[in-house]
Length: 307
Ligand SMILES: [Zn+2]
Ligand SMILES: [Zn+2]
Image 1 (tube, protein in one colour):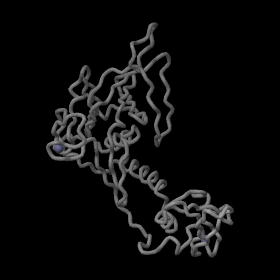
Image 2 (cartoon, protein in one colour):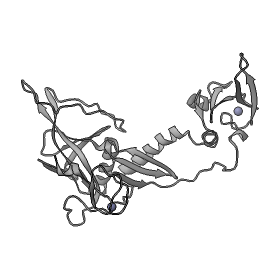
Image 3 (cartoon, helix red, strand yellow):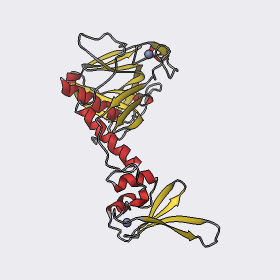
Image 4 (cartoon, protein in one colour):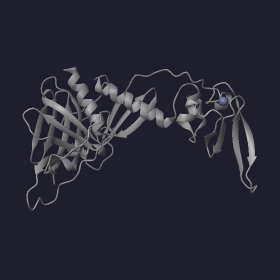
C-alpha cells in the first residue's frame, strides 16, 4: 500500500487527512474540490414577469390556458397556446413541453421541439437565454476557454506535497492517480495491469491510437501535482518531473491525460483524475463537475501561456 493512498491533502491548509474523508479535519474545508470563478455577465430577463406573458417561440404573443380532455375523459391535459403564433406548450408535471408550432423553420422549435422545460427556463429562452442543459454546456466551454487563455485565477493557498522552488505556485495536488506507459507486448504478456484509456469529450478532436504492438501498463500509483512550472508525479516507485516548457502535446481523455515531452519517446498517461471534482461559477450559476483530461489540458495550456 502506498502512503499516498492513505492521505488526502487539504488544498486550503495543507493538513494530511485520511483518504476517505470528505472534509478537512483541521479547517473543515471540502476535500477534492477546487474553486474557480469566471467573470459575471448581466442578464436582461425581467425577474417579475411570468413566462406566459411572452411566447418563447414568436416573442410577441401571450400564452393562455386551453384545457383539452383526453378521449377516455379521465385525464385532463393542461395546455398553453400562443395568441399570435399558435405554439402549444403541454404541461408535464412542473414542466412545459413545446409540442406544436405552425412554422417548423422557427429557430426555437428547431432547438427545443418536444422538450419539457420549466417556466423559468422558457422565460430565459424568450429573453435570449438558454435552457439549463444548453447553458451548462455553453458555460463549461466558456470556462475551459478562459482556463486555456490563462485567465482563471486560482485560490489554492494550500501546502504542497512536494518541495516548491522559489516563486513556484501549487495549482493542484491529486492523490490516487495512476501513471501508465505503453509497453511492447511480448509472448506471455504481462500479469494484469493493462487497460484502455477512455476517450472523453474534448475541445480538440484527436483520435486515441495505440502505438502498434504496444499495450498500456500501469507503472505506479501516486499523487499528481501541478504547479505553475511543472507536472510532478510522486509515486511509490517512480517520480516523474516534467517542466511545462518541455511538453510537446497533451492528449485529453475523460479520466486523464497523455503527455508527450522532449527527451522521452513514449507518451506518459496519468489517469484517475475524474475522482476529483472541480467547482466553478459563471454569472452566478454554480457547477460541480468531475475533473477531466480536457479541463486539465486547458489548465496546463493556460499555465504554459503565462510563462
Ligand atoms: Zn484544511
Ligand atoms: Zn407565439
